[in-house]
Amino acid sequence: MASHGLALYGDLKLPVDFKHFNYVNAQAPKYGHLKAAMSHGFDTFNPFGINGIAPTGIHLLHDSLMKTNMDEDFAQYGLIAEDVVLSSDRQTVTFRLNPKAKFNDDSPITSEDVLFSFSLLKEKGLPIYRAYYQDVREAKILDKYRIRFYLDNTNNRELPLILGQLPVLSKKYWQDKDFSKTTLDVPVSSGPYVIQSFEPNRSITYRRNPNYWAKDLNVNVGFYNFEEIRYDTYLDSTVMVEAFRSGLTDFHIENVAKRWHAEQLWPEVQEGKLIAAEIPHHLPSGMQGFVFNLRNPLFQDIRVRQAMTKVLDFDWINKNLFFGLYRRTTSFFDNSELKAPRWPDKAEERLLEPYQADLPKGIWGSVFELPLSVTRTELREAMDLLEEAGWQVKDNVLQKNGQPFRFVLLMDALSAPVWERVALPFLAQLKRLGIQAEIQTLDYLQYKTKVDSFDFDMIATVWGATLTPGNEQKDYWGSIAADTAGSNNLTGIKSPVVDALIDHIIQAKSKKELMTATHALDRVLLHSYVVIPHWYSDRTRLLHVPSLQRPAKIPLQGMDLMTWWKK
Image (cartoon, rainbow, N blue to C red; front, side, top):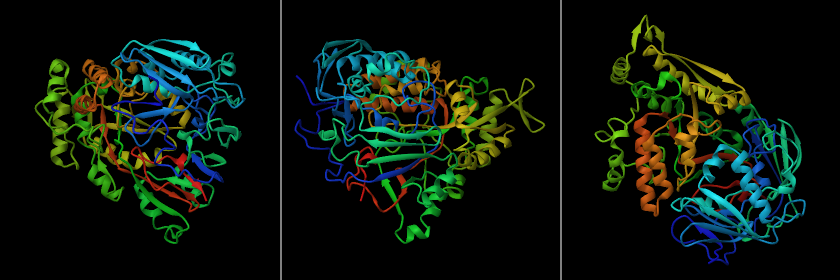
């Protein structure tokens, strides 16, 4: 039976005749210009290919088959697809397109475009698309407005919803173009905005498409309220803040505690000329940390990774640099019920038991804990681990077989001033162990090229997380992704138990099964010491001009700027 949407678990919360999502202002005025900042230049308008850097906001050009409700764990409702049929055996999912759907050149969106988009992204798109779509056996056009996907893995419960997220590209526009090349040709697109003007690497302005076919659709009511959105490039975070303070941008999201503390004392904030807001969210924190590249022989011994993890002095950093605003990350899913409990319950034990031979040593007999501060005890324990791994200090340098322990922490130029403040105390602690480490800073394009090809020793990065982890975990931690350039398996971990647990997550038939499998994956990743965890916050901190307004209700998954408006 056709449905107006799909939910990962349970029933859809909204009926077929719902008017709008419950976290929008349905009467928000369609007015004004939004001035925003982006932290990098751009050289392509193709955000789906592996080459080049696309501008911030480019997603506004492209609609997908369905749209996610931010106030449910994972549920989607019809956008380009008017309805969807998931067969009872979960072997097929059929989307029926809205016959009113069209691209911004007024050509209709048809099943041909959907099939073309699916095939193009799977064959030539970012690696994550290949990972997402690998369980789709084939796609067939049934008629002009209906397309059916045949699924190999019926246990992959998330896959029908992932197909609902498929961005629909124009076959007519893209079929004769090289998808692998960067391009600044303005594409034919399907979304609510079009590109009005741009200067490569400097700025881009999007204009709301007055002929957008879905502007009054229930899933879009209360969204896309700005007539124009302009992003300007700022390659220095301090300059970005000053640009906001000078009125060149309308809002600034702040993730540096020291600056946030100072910004709240600005006269403009005290006088109400600028608004400082903390917006809580209920999303898992994800993982931010220093990443070991396990492809480097230096980091392949877990004892080395354990030793280095012991000497990140969170308490000192939080007190002296962050004004006590952060919490130490002790999970890949902190701030949520997906975080592994201190000890596994019976269900998690049963799930892990078949993989005992491949589990990290000590996972059964110890609780994963991180020191909050670094004392002589932590330094001694770290040194003991390094000595067990065959390393010895000679002339104040940690050595093995005559070779010093030396590595580079790679950073991009924009974030380097922020990261250096926390990295330098960490490197100083490593020096006490005899480890020689230095920071190398590159411009963003050079940095991205090295990271995409895994040509680094260590970086600092963030993996996002959702309330319903699934196929993206293959891209984060899967063995195949470890050898796929451009993937998010930056650590290079290859573990049969991790691969198996990801499959359990993907195949979970209930929220309870999902939680058990996620707890197990979290526990195994933590005990594998592939990342030195940092810290997290359970709120978004931002400043904005008073004319920028937001809805009263904050959805489960956090704020969405496209529901804001100008008064």
